[in-house]
Image 1 (cartoon, protein in one colour):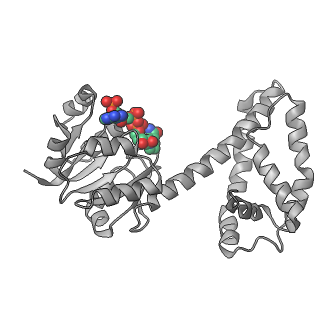
Image 2 (cartoon, rainbow, N blue to C red):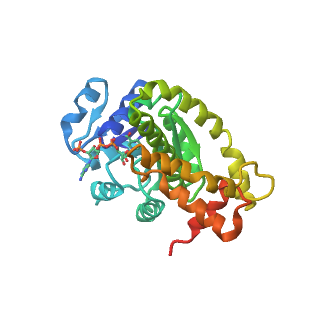
Length: 287
Ligand code: FVH
């Protein structure tokens, strides 16, 4: 019999287990399935119902969460499983195109794509947030349960939007952490403890991050020049300080070099009066 309450969780890796644990702790009846069934043992001890098959798990609840390795795994696991009338929330990481293809493929169900912006230990805590996109009515119906996992952020009906924002946020993170690692490597190359340096780095980056909204406003306006304070020409002229010091310290510039090259090209093309945001124009050229 199909329950209108509770939730099925398919996939009990590091993240799926955190999701199921949190849902149980929040009092939601939870049915779990995993390819390797033993991974459900402690969840069953905590009150979850173990489903022997995917079909059994999906039949138990209207709300079905998937958190598997890839979207291909989702397709594989759900092959031939009746999904009519279900709200399928796919929390597996993927691309916007994969999300749209899954939504089209599961037309019998209401498909919501999700992007978890947290690591497993953060699930259910104050810093976790989860992006969702897909049909608004399905999101509204699922929201009371989804809210247990982390702050839900609904982005719109296009199922690809959650993956797009997920990738954008991860791009910001990796870009920033690339700089962090380069900075730590420089300090370590001078045989200095990076832990003494870390608070200074955090302070500097926190101040710089305050400019993100201003950058976004300039990008939206397509207006990169004017009273910029720190022109590209100025930054380009001083860029060799970074690369020369990197080389002198016996380090590779791999994490740092691409942005320097983009600043050089944008300045050489006559846009030295812009600020750093101007280099976004060069990303359009994929030839
Ligand atoms: N963990 C994290 O920090 C990130 C945070 C942001 C979102 N990601 C995404 O979440 C998806 C799952 O990640 P995970 O950390 O749970 O991954 P694993 O611990 O490696 O678990 C993988 C689960 O997928 C099952 N699985 C893999 N291949 C198959 C298959 N062919 N058929 C059926 N199930 C499969 C695996 O089962 P088992 O190995 O235990 O039998 C796990 O349940 C992922 O998209 C992240 O990018 C996590």
